[in-house]
Amino acid sequence: MSGDAGQADADSSTEGRRAVVAKRVDSGEADLAEISQLAAAAGYEVVGELTQTRTEDAAFMFGEGKVAELRDLVRRTDANAVIIDNDVGPYQTFNVGGKLPEGVEMIDRFTLILEIFGQRANTRKAQLQVELAELRYELPRAEAKASLAKRDERPGFMGLGEYDESVERDIKRQISEIRDELESIAEKEEARREQRRDSGFDLVALAGYTNAGKSTLMRRLADELEVDENADRHRDLDTTAESQDMLFTTLGTTTRRAEMEKRDVLLTDTVGFIADLPHWLVESFESTLDSVYRADLVLLVVDASESVEEMREKLVTSHDTLYERNEAPVVTVFNKIDRLEPGELADRRAALSGVAPDPIAVSAKTGAGVAELRDRVEDELPNWERERLVLPVSDDAMSLVSWVHDHGHVAEETYAGDQVTVDFEAKPSIVARARAKAADLSAPPAEESA
View 1 (spheres, rainbow, N blue to C red):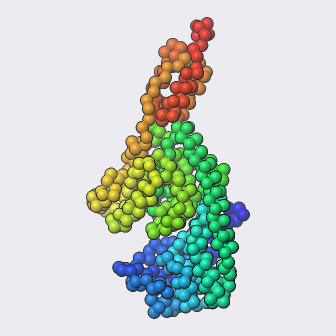
View 2 (view 1 turned 135 degrees about the horizontal axis):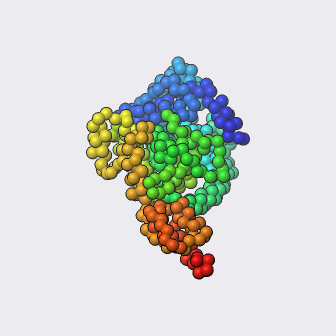
View 3 (view 1 turned 30 degrees about the vertical axis):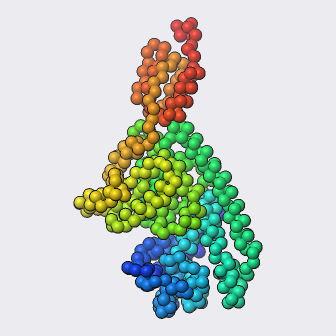
């Protein structure tokens, strides 16, 4: 299926989808903002909301009376789906689904996220990661679903069919095969990263929550210079760095070149973090997160227009994800400062100094603070070495001088008689290669130089 055809199918499949969103919390007040955004990203029109504050009911998640209220709300709004912003167990799904009008689909938070990922997965790698996540989600539920189907004499309940040991074995076999293919893709991507480093590029990854403005910031820094030479390229990569007010605009990664004052860096943007993702789901997308874990520098982008409490929660969760495996320095970027009132930025800096001790404040939309961010990127990247080469003037020497210009920062280039002197800075690996190339050059014969 082509990218265009796949997108057309996805668009048509979301027509007429009306959903009631619901959430239970143990205490406090339930917030339905994010689940409503997720529902919209999946193509649902949210037509009703329901919340409850109480301890979890083992049979229904909500209290039984609240489930009856949910059923009535579905009927009044003519909804064809119920989206619950909780991790709903298979028995709870079965019980609540049995109380709803016939034909109404029951979806929990993680099923919805997987549905969105599936709609955005237009590369082989993304498709494999989505399939892996779906299988890991289904594995512990397979036996429970089949048990429910047998009890209720509905062999096709939730699409599983009658249970036997081959079902579990088949899921495990598929998981193993997908992991093997993803490892092969990861090896190729790691080789590509090293090839880029050998070419003199530093790798900078953009991380952060969805809608923090990562894609807009990438466009501002990269000036739309796209360099992704992924052979598995698809239609979605053409617009990966477009900024839209929608969660999960894309599932893939985009890499673009950005010129700093001295260095050329490659910026990589990937799918944003989202609250309360279970460990199994994060692990399923480990291959995509490698672009963050294996970068030379990470820019953690935070929406500064959110409340201090929201910012702190997202910073702490992001740090847990990043520092688990990432060894590169992390620079926190407070984005969207154009939305702040005078004095608010200083208040946020002070309140969040414990989790963001030295943030850079920018507006990717207006460009404010971006010059300071470029300087900070260069300061935080691994140190370059300074080198001075004295070469005989020749065609080979001129090729080497050109190569140094392409792979480092030339501070001075001077000519005296039959020699050229190049004073430059570059990554240690580039300096070592330049020295090796210079050593191979021999002075021209005396009669030629005369």
